[in-house]
Length: 212
Ligand code: MG
Ligand code: ZN
Image (cartoon, rainbow, N blue to C red; front, top):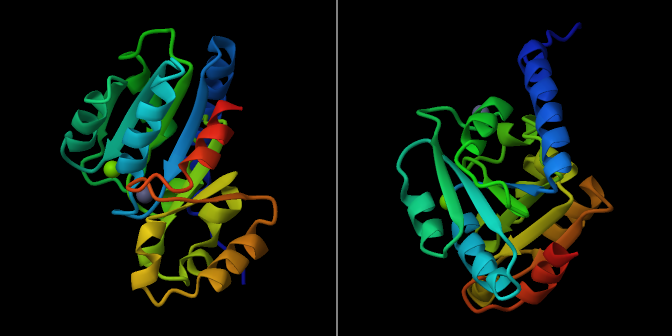
């Protein structure tokens, strides 16, 4: 049966715009990471701790926060001293390259590292290129071991996966090894960083990766 390519014109236009953004980021020397997870995996908390740790080595960090509603996450990030811009998608469940292009006007030119916190959703954010250097998936241990197998695209497309909230592992019946095995079978070259932003365990490996 022939498949109807519902997505392709929309994704094609996004891809073209994302490539222009990627060229622009490269020319300006800005490294861009696109953070993708379901709601509540701990993206904003991870960013708060990450930015605070990186600030000791004076990296210029900026964050674009994508949410359906509210400026709460950008307000949290602004308290770390990083430049933060909130995008409200008003219902849309992902960011696209056009939204990023508009948000860029708010930043000074000396940004070295730009985090894009995508809308909390494991599905379509994986399909929309934002001109990033790499996608970073965040999966909390409370979500269940079956999520990588059920939502493979984001794990296939990401260069890194952060397993968050590992301080909670003693309280959970999670088959951790099976979850990691599923991630590796989807994407054998993905880098895996288990960590707790709350206790700081595992943060160093992630920070080392960022500094490289
Ligand atoms: Mg958030
Ligand atoms: Zn969407």
